[in-house]
Image 1 (cartoon, one colour):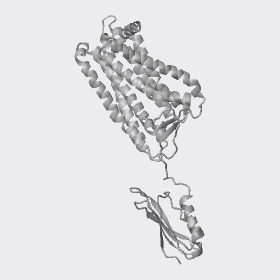
Image 2 (tube, one colour):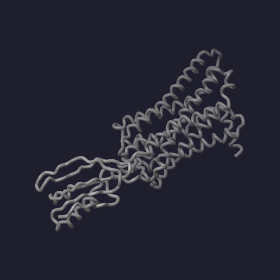
Image 3 (cartoon, one colour):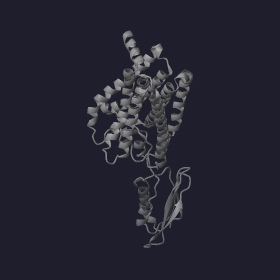
Image 4 (cartoon, one colour):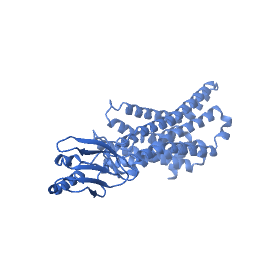
Length: 406
């Protein structure tokens, strides 16, 4: 007879398989306590056979804070000790990992168009051309506003802010997409993925907020023209810029933070070209309800409030224009905000189409929302400076002067 023994092991898998031992040793009294790391807890089962041929009795045990596995063993047959130790080793080290044994994720793999990966070869050329167009047009617009003294006005400073946001969005999304298309560089580090997620969410809301500030600028210019120089000043632009950055940065910072704190146990393959919150959080084995709810509430609160204020501004503008009786004055007033209205309409339309396709994801192939998401970060930045350059006389003249200098 062997007296009660204490077997102490080091770091163990988070699983106890006592059943394999007791199937062969009905005379063994085996009570196992799996003691996890400090701060962790788990409910385990204690299996104690009453006697040979009788059914085992199961009770629930709570794990204690440690990293040891303790066994109290009473064996009636001395000759079976070696086989018992082998079965104990097999149960502990050769058992399949449980749902709680997860390896930390250090990088993700981006799989563009999981159902139609052959698309990426055809899309690489138009996307690269649009990317070059967006970067070149926005850089030209910024350089023109900086060098042309007549464009040093609040309205054009706000347009410069919009161009800067477009450039950052393009550089955050499109180079990685083209690297996947051309060089099959699908991997993205853990930190880079969540940084991309933050920039996409934050700067998209910054664009919406900038459109709202520009709508207010046009409202003051048309409805209160005499007070415009005293209201819309350089100080107003600085304060508006701080407000745009602070509001959206603070509201959307929790989105990547919440996602990065999740436990990822369903693999590291993201079925998207970019690290969207929904695509990444699907890989987590934790509850993501709060994560998705926060992004939904924050996104629609900010974008919805901006859209409401934009609609109110243009309704007041339209009301004021209709009251103007001078010949040609109404057309001139509308032309001053025509470019801005076109950009807002295009931005809202693309965003609305993207939202609808995501809501109808079950009826639409998953590759379609992925493509629309890419185009949403590329087409508006490419068209914004072109629309302003074509429709605004001062900017057109400034670009012509810039080209003559070159």
